[in-house]
Length: 153
Image (tube, rainbow, N blue to C red; front, side, top):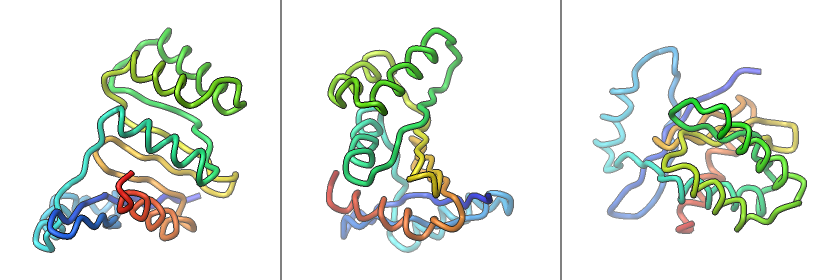
């Protein structure tokens, strides 16, 4: 299954979020940034708290399962703990408030969160505003993400 990439931007005059699609292999990321700036958009990034709130919203309201949380350093014990907590929240053995607190207490920075959408698509949201989505779901998922952000999640 092929993935498509997008970058989330925000128009700070209108408050509108928009996902600009790009081809990772074409290597024109700087041109993408320039195009968005020329249209009045600025780059969006997310802190760990925002990433976890977004994950909670997608899980509770869009039936997406968190399948992984990545961070910018290696720590096998921490990875095992996060994987354990992720399994518990998937099985609803712990609530989201506990899950978010446990994750954000342990991590100052989350690099990306991976989701499974009803076994029909995969989604990754990165802290730098990049999304990676299964090709056949890209348009719907990118629009869904921007709609959620436009509602000031």
